[in-house]
Image (cartoon, rainbow, N blue to C red; front, top):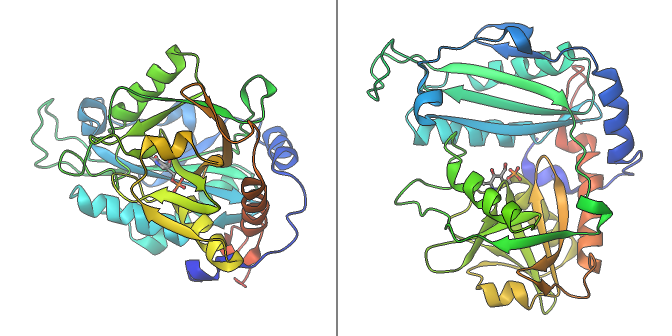
Length: 324
Ligand code: PLP
């Protein structure tokens, strides 16, 4: 299946909330995770305290969701994980096909149909607490949890963002395209936003252009056109899905530099992520976005995205059925 085939729409059926609640009930036993060759209860999972991931944030990760028994855009996530490993020179601990099978096995072991799945690949350890990676063997961890249903804070209809004083680091420092275990930049932005009573941070680049939010890409609607930043971002797979939906539905879209002014003056703003889907933004730095409620394009794209993740064409079955 190619990612370009993912735009077919089918009935989204049962809502995300209902599915997540049902799976949360099914997943009441202790979660089982995969660590270096075996499945173990999470509380028994072990890696060395000398692992470079712990000492230096030296490793990569990726997140994929299972939706009603199918891992959504699994191969796109695997490809991105492999690109992250290549960029930080961690030799893949397993091949793509093996990772596919291990992931399916881990979701099944947790008896979940709808799940949050996180792969973590650490540099490993070499028995010294020093930075030299010589002799390190990478660790592979697969964490599976019931799908985490995000609810709007205080029952509001959208998020309030605050631009963070800390900036998204440029590629010359650490390429934001790498989904690295060194997310301190994003965590600090989140702390800033929360301490200012905002729901989420909006990160700018060194020149003041809009980049992303911690764990989310950003879209703004400006004079009917969808805009999304081009530089210093993680190239989100949900972002790619939104871009495919825009192309299918004939909604004009530009990948370009976005000044903060454009976000403040936007008709609509929304965030995208694998774990959270499409999330509307109703306020940035005290400026009300549009009329302060999720807008019509958000509603249109949110519906199409839910249909996409429910489509058999976009997911790999955890039950070994033939792909459509
Ligand atoms: N930006 C950052 C920094 C992220 O870590 C993520 C995902 O976790 C995203 C954007 C959204 O990417 P995706 O849609 O692939 O989940």
